[in-house]
Length: 429
Image 1: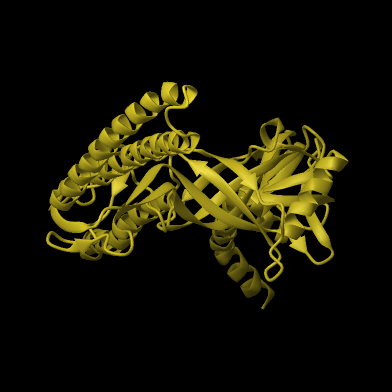
Image 2: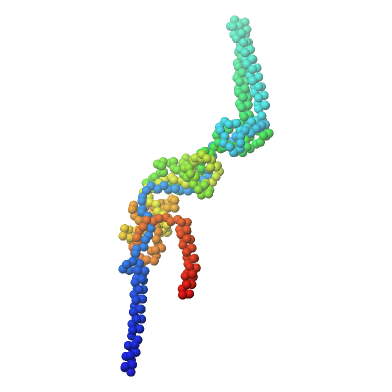
């Protein structure tokens, strides 16, 4: 039995040794390939996760308030018929631009011409009577001194002369009035602007008893935009300016505005604030404001509802941060600050307002500090206190990121077909 046991061990030992060597080589190869993957770096050290940061840079930031408003023409003139008569002709194209003094309508002038001629005839009669009365008074003057006529007769002659002169003056006024009325037969535009539709047609009787409205001319370059602001916000702004937190935009009351149209686009030309009302509406608690906006192309029309971006003040030494960098809660607003050695600390900040999808920070940050904007999800898988590597944050475009993802999906879809072609020769072999 001992001899048989020895012979079996000696016969199987080479095969066992070969198998053991192969297992050791496989284990050694797996250990070498898995070591970098598990450690992620030589020596097994895990690299610091990268987070996107922005550097705090204090500057003067304009505080913009967006308010609803309505456009209004800067000048509006109602064209009315000041002379009675039949409307003969319209001399303009509806919806066109007209000049001041341009002829718009013609009213039948025949009755007005007759009235003017009558007034001139009355004036001529008065002038003739005045000449006769003056001659009689001049004749009585030496006679009364010689007691050839009574003083009563002379006084009557002088009174008749003055009455005749008054009639001449009244006749001249009547002639002037007739000429003015005759001029009203040609209806002209009182201002330059854009005229709307005609409110009457040819053949209509106008100006009979009242001044009939014929058309409306509006001056729309520039245009006014009227809007309201809460009295509470106005008082808060004035207190902040008095405390030195803000300063007036442009150094005075004339703030700049931007008009946002109904489709959300910004009107390219900038306007200026003209005035703010001194009284507060008792029913709404709002203060009325008015701004002037250039409108050379006539794109802004009266009555249009718009949004007004009003910059009334500027925050001094303020810092702007992307909105995703600030965590807003009921307890306060906080940001994550990355130090030079990669440590992250929470900082409480004071937020004023939003501008262009960014928060305006008034207090809590210093110039040069790095504020974390991106990479919060990476830290959720890391233990607390893990140092990070700060890299400049770049705003990504969602549309640009979608294109590489779609391109990458094409090779992935074609992989099974390619694999099937490759496996066929292997199976055949």
